[in-house]
Image (cartoon, rainbow, N blue to C red; front, side, top):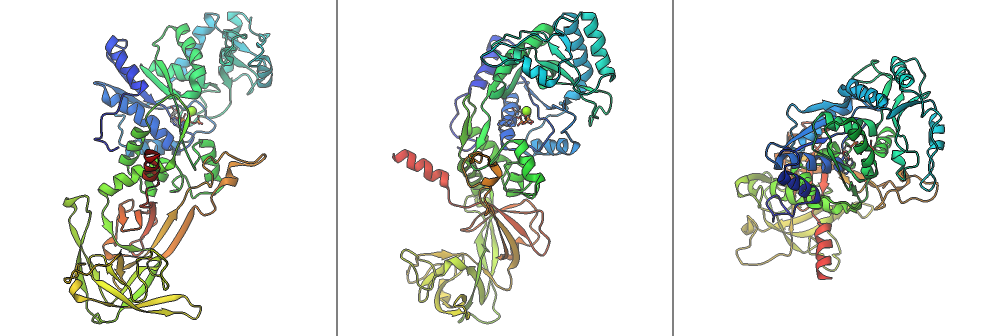
Length: 565
Ligand code: ATP
Ligand code: MG
């Protein structure tokens, strides 16, 4: 499933593009766009759309992909989002070059196009309130009713529309509507609203406008103005396509082809920007880049690599049916990439001290450790070994359960890159908790093998007590307890499915000294414990790590189970 794996069959959108190139429909041009509305941060679903649009442009000679901010709604949009979106698209590995556009730059052109439709008798100013418009619209089973303002003269419409623009009318008092068909079986074609009055300042156009275009009116025009060939959007716009086509046909302008694909849904998380915003605003997560969120900046902070996300998007493919992808597949993709690329280190998350009784008091040995067994070029490093060490608390059992092969009284195990040790005694606190172990080591086993050929059943990771650094480690679990967070009791709310244990903070972990000063966002494998990423909250003295993912691959298991079925 890696980058260089077997050639994947072209998805239906790439087939369309290839077909168009063959027939010369667009004279060999391929121009796509990624058109986020700057009203939130990007998430993994957007990554799917980004990989698709930028990917198709890159795969075709001379192909282009625009980054376009669809900033037609002044109310919810902010500069902060624009900068974050640019950063995320760049981080994912895509480059729009000079092709950065804003829908708001086309407001004047859109206005002129609207005037053209009015003159052609295809649009009219309507005085019905929003509620009345809804009433007149009819239902799926009943046709709508014509607005009493539908037959206004072209002159009256031109006059009123101009005065709408000038700000003569209050919000909601009038709209400009397309004159199509109030009996159309497609509700989107029942005289849809093109402009509404909204006396609100826009982040980019300020107070220049007090009428703003609706999505349906604006989007096709944006595509047309930019000369987009393939306008790729998600399935919910499928029954808006006749309207998209109608507007462009009436105007007789460049007519991009709208193609819909299924949006990405992931289990155990939410993707709606409205819901993500709610979690952030209500403090239920720690900001947009909380590592539990499916936002791009959250995944980045969690330790996901752009390669892992791009591979995931490749593996899930593109199709026309809505479905939910198992989050285990995303985790599988990051594991696969990090296995190849991340240096191994030793870190003890829940330390238990051990004293090697027969090791000299002040002796320190620098033992050689392999940085990445998957990458010979990654070399080796030295890890200090001394009389007092920490091992993982869960690697010791006073009374070993069946199949527990790790340390227990009288048992011999290997310390990775070091020696065989045997536990001789467990020191307990008054409450019975084991607080320290005494062990002996066999000097002949340096490097991890016994000259007499004797075997041990397990190898533990460890750090030297006095050389290791104290670290904080944040362990994450799914943000929601339910596969589908929207699966709620009546009257309930998706937030009632939040997982109370989605974050566990361990404050007295010990990591090997090579991690001193590790750069924020650098990624490591903690041997036997999983993949971890340096959090920007780290200080020189005290690193903070986020667990990206454990080593256990639930996805590989699922696949194996499916194969043997
Ligand atoms: P909103 O709820 O505000 O409409 P949106 O998720 O549609 O949000 P946009 O900013 O309009 O967000 O999305 C930009 C592009 O990303 C669109 O072309 C949209 O189709 C695509 N996109 C958004 N969510 C997903 C998703 N879950 N899977 C695939 N593509 C998506
Ligand atoms: Mg949208």
